[in-house]
Length: 81
Image (cartoon, rainbow, N blue to C red; front, side, top):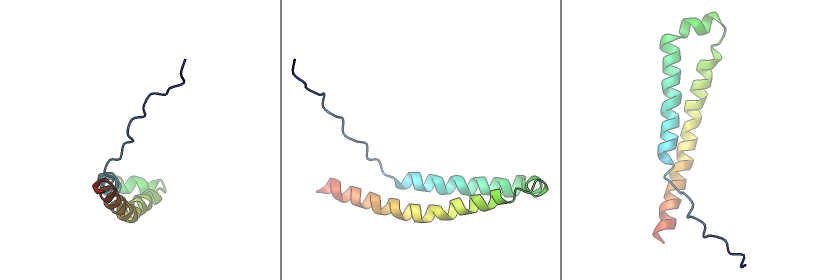
């Protein structure tokens, strides 16, 4: 019996910028919800660092967005050639 393997499917290569933008939006919304609706609770229970975590996630999203923009540009270039 021959040792044939079935053909491999083509790898997924979706555009990544929407994922980076979704992450930015998610961190911004989480931070705003905490700030607007749970500020008193966070202060009472010494959890103000949750707001800083949301801010850090939002700010780290910008370098991630830049990387994903470059990735998508290289992806388009690869597919064009």
